[in-house]
Image (cartoon, rainbow, N blue to C red):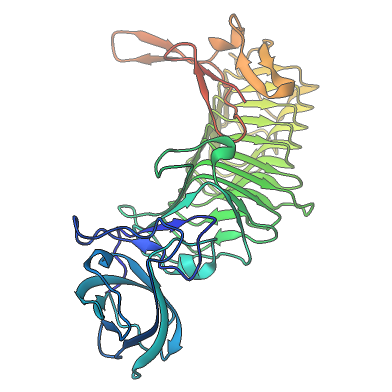
Amino acid sequence: MALASATTWEMQTGGDNTNGGGFYDRDPGTSVDYSQQTSAQLSLADLACLDTSTTLTSATGGFTAAMVGNLVYIASGTNFVVGWYEITAYTDTNTVTIDRTAASVGLDASAGNGKVGGCLAFPTDAIVEAFVAGNILYVKAGTYTFTENVIPSPDGTRVNPIQVSGYKTTRGDNPTGDDRPLFAQGAYGFDGVDANYWWSRHLRSTSTSGNQLRFNSYSGYHNLYAYNSSGTSNRRALYVGYLSMMVDCEGKSTNGYAVGGYSARLIHNCYLHDSSIGAHVSGSWDFCISGCIIDTCTTGMYCNVPVAINNTIYNCTTGISVIAGSRNAWFLNNIIDSCTTGASSAASYPNDYWDHNNYHGNTADVSNVTKGANATAHDPDFENAASGDFRLKTGSNCLTAGQPITLGTGGNSIATHQGAVPSVAGEVTAVATDPINQQFVR
């Protein structure tokens, strides 16, 4: 056996990494979740387990039926395999059943030190290695200082992804801004280079690591803030991997990429700023970046085969830089404003589609790019771009200058505007002016 896929883990700043740390409601109505308290419910120093058995015993005792579904962490002992185990059944105060034997192969275990219940204190590699598909790590608001690289290898699945989810007071309250828990990573990374189907939500992260927040394929990022302050070039604040997606995130990397990745699926409603490169994504044939603000970067968007729709790119040396690619690229309904060069391509690619973009205030609008017959040159009339407020003022010509979309045979026309999505201290907050043309403010 193994830990249940529906196991939830709990992390709080007052916790302890020798606590049980997790819970599965195995016996509804009887099982009690002790993982959300800071102290262990039970601590024992005389645990024993036969190598051929899943029976865990203690002469001191103290087990209860309510502990079924809680994890017990066995930290040390003679012939014990250190790790987290679920209590799956209760026999009596001295005896419970766990999900798998805790003894080393061929050896009986004794004198074990273990704790039932209580939350964890900060992320470590040992903790994430214990996860199985479907597990969720809930992280309560506070600051969590890393002491090592965290390099998870377990995979989730499409049905049961592994999740790391921050909350302020109550699980699921979806905090924003500084109410989100902070991973103060220092020189360390949270680098799931081989971990697939992971979701991370409602977190902040600071680091100087080469891969600050990274998961591999089919993963997702939602409502994250990541700042990489390293002076070393090309370091990523956020990484979006193969067929993965990122929504409502903020990235900043002093001398690297606010977000970097390979063959990503989607970057949407993100604020990428004050970086060497805002979005650096290559190798993808179906990648889309939409509704993003890219602000004050050396290169705003560096890519080869994207679909870029409804973005605002502001105050960059090069707004969009298209490198050599083997497939067609589409650039539609973007505002490119106050850049040295608005859009540049490695060569003139006739099959790339550029149109309905608004170029304003650039020293040069394009290089090796044909604007398209419907390009515009309106002043977007931002509320206050210098202060990060990219809302379009009432009456801005960019509100209705995008390519119209006609739905159905009745000829119903919906006018799409050309961009403007920013962030408020790391989260994206919509200020709706009508059901179609939502505007946003940093």
